Length: 134
Image (tube, rainbow, N blue to C red; front, side, top):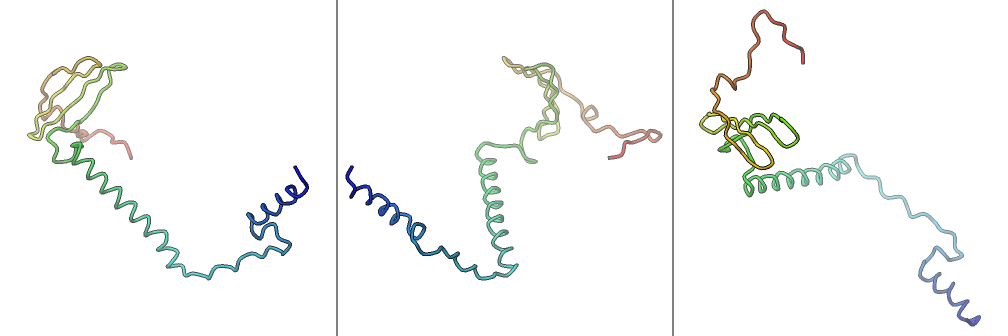
């Protein structure tokens, strides 16, 4: 390479970097104008509100598209009891109030039995027993 091309390289880099390579001292930009607390709070809360509303809209669309369960779903799962690595008993409640026990394995799904409402209702503690604190 010639001497001329060797001196051109730092000059090109200096132009590409702007003021950083110049002989002038680098002065920090002027401090931004002070803003109020309310403006800063709105700058945080407004995007957060848009994100939350967007997530709710997406959840509603997914629920409608894929039929995710809700209080008005035709079937709901009350409890899942694992029996093995791939086997479980599932309590399924119909909209009419009937409850079925279904056996689920890796290869099959089998009806086990229908339960009465008394069997599924939450147990109430007897009057003389101690109830644990939450």
